[in-house]
Image (cartoon, rainbow, N blue to C red):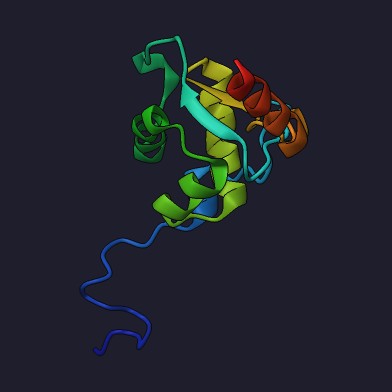
Length: 123
């Protein structure tokens, strides 16, 4: 009997994204994660009771490089909503931290920097 046309020998096991999240479609931690939010390692060590999958472990390793949520999704080749659920799991356990990137409004404007440079040059 022939295999269906969509099956490929090299593809390996195919896992649907909802299987990675246990069927959850939303992050249950209550944290709204933006695409530009940065992921950093948490202060807690993982235990066997945390039931982490391989994707969770990959995200924990990636957190040392402080990637954005979008970068995590791209590197794992997973939909952003799936990554948000996985990040929520890690946040709930304290295994990662998420912070907002520096906002443009908090950065000094060019005029202020020019005045500082002129003042330093005058010294």
